[in-house]
Length: 525
Image (tube, rainbow, N blue to C red; front, side, top):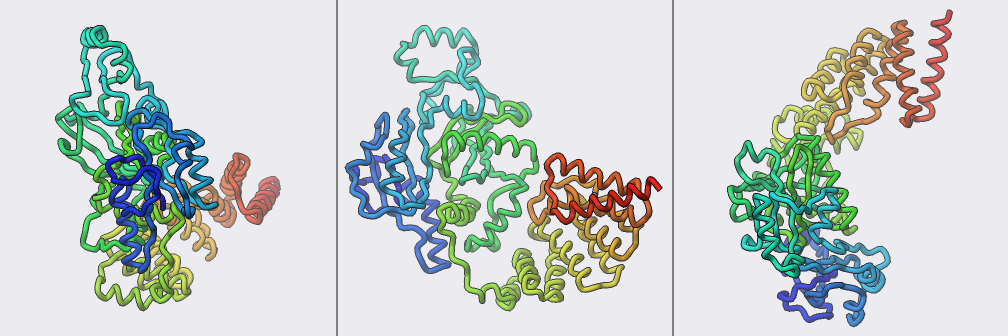
C-alpha cells in the first residue's frame, strides 16, 4: 500500500516514496492492527506500507504535484490522506494520475475525496445549513475549530451587531450555520452530538453528551451503538478476526430503532456518493426525529481505533475491500474433531457450538449435527438469532431423519417460541403436515405464517417464504381440504405479486397456474 499524504510533521521528504510504518499516519493505527492480526494468524504480512509526502497548504492538488515522483513499482492499493481542512481540493487529474502511474491494473484507490468544505458536506446530506438569521453559530470554514473560534449568537440583534463590526474579508473566512438542537436534548438536558465512524459502508455511532456547547471527547460522556440488525454480521466478523476476544466486551451497544438507522444509512449513502470516503468520522446532528445533518468531516479519525469493536471489525472489512482477505485455514481446522477439541476447553462457547453443528451438517452427518444444534439451542448466551436458527435446524433435521410426528411438532414449535417474529418454523410445519395429508394442520400453520411480516433479522431469513412460499402452501393446504375459494385467493395473491415484479422459479409458477386452472373448473362445476 502507498499512503499519499500532506502531513508536514511526518518527517517524510516531499515527493519521495519511502517505507514508513502504518502507525505514523491517520488510518495507520487501525491498518497496523489489521496487519498484526494477519501476521499472528497466517505468519505473513498483509500489507507493506510506503509513504509519499506532498506539500501542505496547496489550494488545488492536481497532477503537477505527482509528476516529479519516481515510481519504481506500482501498488495493489493507494490510500489518499490529504488534509483539506483549509479549503484545499483535489482535481480529477490528480486521481487519474494516481490510477495510471501508481496503481496496478486492478488496484484499489481508497478515500479519493475531492473536498470536505462544511457547506458542501451539509448539502450532500440534503440540508440547508447556512443561515443569515439567529439563533446561529459562526465558525471558520475549515475542518478544524477551537472553542475560541466558535461564536454562538442567540438573538438577531447580536448577529447584526457582529456583522456590522466584522470586516468583509474576515467574514469571507467564516460560515454562519443554524444552531441545531439534538432531538431529545430537552429530556436529557445535555448537548448532544453523533460521531459516525464509517468503515466503507459499515456504520457505528459514537453518541456524545456534554453540558458544554462545544462537545469534545475530553469533555463528554460517550458510548458506541450499532444497528441491532448488524449483530449477526458483527459476530461473524468477530469470529473471523483472529482477535483474542474471549472473556471480553466488544464495547458496543445495539439499538433496535430501525427507522432511525434507515434514515442514518440514507444520509451516509448520500455522503459517500458525493465524497467517496472509505474510512472517516462524521459529526452529525439530529434536529428532529429521524432527520440527520452531517455538519463536519474528520479525515483524521480520532481514538476509535482503540475501541475493541473497530479493531476486530477492521480486520475483516479492510482485508475484503483491498482484495487481501486472509487465506483460508487448512482443511484440518474445519474438521469437526478439531472444533470438538476446542469445545472441550470452552464448552459454553455458543458460536463455536454453532460452527460445529454447521460443519457436521455440511458433511451430511445429520445425527451429530442434530446433537450439536440442540446443544447450541440450549445455550442462552450468544446471539439470539443464532440460537433460533439452531433450534430451527433441529426441527428440519428431525424431519429429514423421519422422527415421530410429536417430536417434529415440538422441535419446530420450539423454534417459533424462541422467535415468534419469524415464520420459517410455520412454513416447515405447513409443508410437513401437507406431506402427511393433514390438511387441517397444514392450513393452520400456513395461515399463521402468511400473517407474519418479514422480520428485520439478518441471520438465515428466507425472503421467498415471506413473499410467496407461505401463500403457496396455504393454497395447497386449502386445495387438499377442499376449500377451493381460499386456495384460489392465496394463489391469485401470488400471481398479483408476480405481475408487480416478484420473480418465481418457472416450474413453480407454471404449477400454480395449472392448479388455479383446475380450481376454476371445480368451482364452475
